Amino acid sequence: MDLTVPVLLKNKPMGFDEYCMTVEREESSSLDYLVNKDAGWSVPGSLTAKVTPQGILKPFYGDTVVIPLEEDLMFLMDSFQELLQIGIRDLLAEPLLKEHFHITLHDLSNSPDENSIEEKMEENRQKCEDIFWEIAKYLKKNPGMSRVNLHSLYAFPCVNVSAVMGFAPEEDKDYRTIMNLYNLFDDVVYLSYWLRMHVTLSYFKPFVFSHEQRGVLHKYLSRISSKRVPVGLDLKKLAYQRFDSMNRYKTIFTLGDFC
Image (cartoon, rainbow, N blue to C red; front, side, top):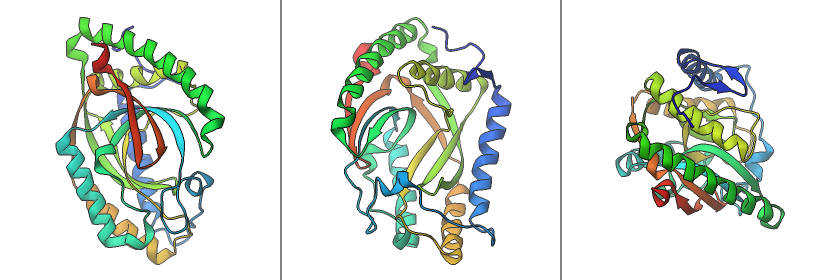
C-alpha cells in the first residue's frame, strides 16, 4: 500500500488541479441552476426511498465507510443546518442529528429492505476489516499520513436529494491520500462514480420546488457558501458504519480499533 502514488479515478489519471477545478465547477453549477428561470425540479426515487412527503426520515438500511467530523466542525455544520431550517423549513425533512455528521469516504450497500442486503453487508464488513488492518499498518509506518486537510467550496443542492456542503483537498498530498483510500474500498463494492467529499446538511422533502422556492433555497445556500471552512480529518477515526435511517448510524469499528 502506498497512499502517495498518482491518483487513478476509475482507472483514468486525474491530477490534483483537475480534480479541484472539476468539483468546484460542478458545485457552482448546481447552485446557479436554482436561479435559472428555465430550470425544472424532479424528485428522484432515491429521495422518496428515504423521506416521506411529510419530511419524516423513513427506515432505510445499509453500510458505509465514513470519516466522522471533529466536534467543532460538527457544531458548525449544525449551525448551517439550523439556518436552513429557519429559512426554508417547508422544503426540508426533519433535522439531522449533529452527532452523525460525517464525510462519506465510500458508499457500500443500501436498501429499504434490510433482509435483502444482510448477507452483502456481512461480506462487506469482513472485507472492510481486512482493509482497515492494512491501512492501520501503513499509518503506523507513516504517521505523517494520518491527517488530511480540506477546505469548503459551496453549499449546494446535491441531485435534488439534499443540501450539502462540498469540500476539496487543500494540497496534492491530501488529494492523493484521500483518493487512494477511496480506491481501496472499490474492492469491496465497485462504484461507477468517484468521490465528491461533502457533508449532508439536510434532506429535502420529496415534492417539486417552484421557481420561487428554488430562489429562496439559493439565497440560503449562497449565504452558507460565503463561509470558507477549513477541515482537518483524523484518519484514525475512519469508521465502518451501518444505518437504519439517515438519522441513525452505528459505528461497527474504527481505524483506531486496529492501531
